[in-house]
Image (cartoon, rainbow, N blue to C red; front, side, top):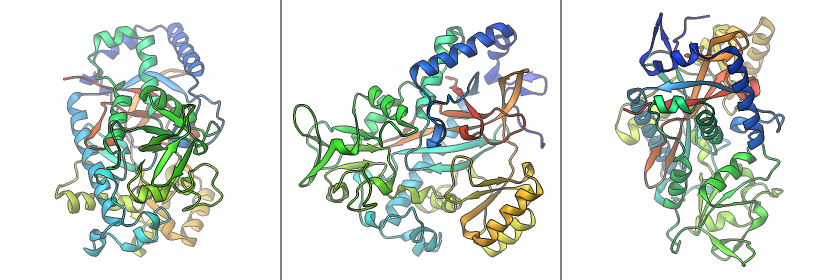
Length: 470
């Protein structure tokens, strides 16, 4: 395995952000650690956080493993990440406005038109619509990996309905409950302001036809959905109604919610259902989850949908390779955060390279997620590599490839004691009248020794993410 960056230790020395954690770690007896871990699991189960992070399927009652050792960023490290994430979110939204409008970036030859207009995530029904404040993607989850003290890479963008924010909030709540002394000794930026920021963001994009204080709702597919806990959790914290499609109806130019006191007009819908199910009159006619006629109201400016239908075309893994170009084209800036170098198998030269170096690369489906539909070359045997080679040859445009990065590692409690395990990070950027994010995010950790796959469906866990105050 290639040498990796340990976020806590530089040789025998403890890096400054983790200075206050070494004594805590050394002074914790094994018995106390086991007791605290059991306490954390009991709290998670009592609260009911048993859904698969990022909308992965699987057992709805399975706990995502929680590791008590926090991941820490200094104020300086976070400042750079924050600037880079906000820059990326602004560029992605500018791209969405453009591709559903004049398509200037394609006309300028900066991105191939086929990647956009032939993309399954491109929704023709949205063309020509400029949503309130020109925002298509209101909650942008940017997945980041670290390879060195100052080296961060964007692994992928999530512009539709990124999940996992309830873990960011509950990880912190449980850590503060179990280890209050750590929060007295360390000046840690709060994350519990996220629900209020989210509510403010959603209210800020209310349509022009909104009269007075906007009525915001969260639209969920229902309690069988793997992320239902998060939907109800956020609705509760924001003080808004959690609704299903059957609770809403269209009458004339507006959307209404059924209540015990009669119909109430809805101005902003934070939808947690996929595009295909939003409106059976516009998308899938067999959808029982959406609201008939919703898209007509959206087009006429009677309601805001967050994130907008069609936003997924910006987070396609083939389109991802052009985000640095979007930043230059729309913002006139150089990217603060770099992409992972990426080969597009739909390009002849890239395909040739990928097929020649397959055992060294990570290969992903363009539309894949959750750690599925991918090949981690160095961790695969000859048969797996050969099988994947055949898939790529059969449909090259469906795959991208990237080098196997030596992801950074953070100390993690494992059966043998404490050992470094690889991590990634998903901060949540809110885009409305303002672009902002809370100082923190969801850190996922690969609990298997040597594993680089952090997805919960593949055995990964979660950690609390600290940003130290200046």
